[in-house]
Length: 398
Image (cartoon, rainbow, N blue to C red; front, top):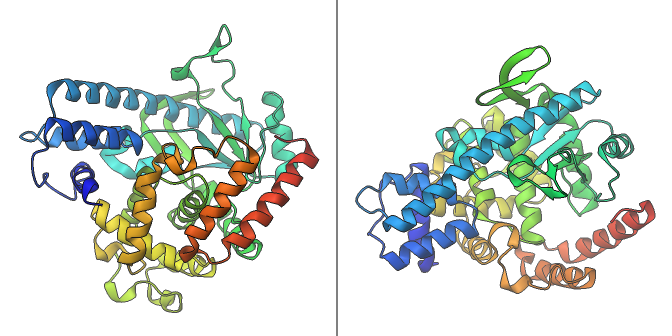
């Protein structure tokens, strides 16, 4: 991990848990830092750190390139913020309750860094179940891109010119009929109960996305959306990170999201960390997530995650609901650095998209490598994938 330590320092400078780099990087090292930031989808956030390094700044040409990309990220965030409000307003007008997950919703927890977080698609949960949500999705155009969670919707399909999408005017939208899943059916049943228990609070929880206004039919209003609660995010985001670790891979951007989720929770005493049977002694915000994570069998993974959040982002002990585990944390961090954002640059997974068989084989072998975090994924993973494949084919989905 030594080759990455300077990059971790830049991350900590960017989020304010470190004042400056331990040494001034060379021009070549700055190029490497920029490449790492791109690989981990942290170009914008790391630019905030670059701006703080007055006496350790990168070469001028790289600084200008970095600045240009950061400006584009800020512009893109404004567009996606508007799109989030538009999507949810339309869904509400059509009779669905909904909440927007991940992405722009968690981005608000970044505070002044929020405009620099790289945005992705819009993930929105709609109440009603698969059949009702799918029927609604098809009103925007026929879709066969459906999986166990969600479906792709060409919500902004009008944003095209001569058949070519205009990137700055288009945002991918996914309609979720489940917030997320686990492939172990027993753990998945518990996870779905948790989501159902949290649904009313999530539908009612609204946040303001930015200082921009949303021009609705009844006049301008603050740009706001319904989005999950902190308790929901503590469980949902951890399961999301865990799931993608076992599939295509996970990057530091998703872990930074979890860092800021924890930063939004009142700090806890060291003596209250880690164990579910002490959850009644923990702050009320954390007690339910601690219990659910334990029931989902994710305590060891959570402890590894805590070490990574401490080592990379500088998370202090008082904000750790689980005791950090260095050995597992180092293993997890190595996987993350090899993977990049959602495994896009993982040389071990080049054949992942080659065919369904290659994907099946690579993911199942990966579950053996990651067995310390789930001893039974090698068993439940293939069964779930086989079931899901047959289910999609029976429904005519891709």
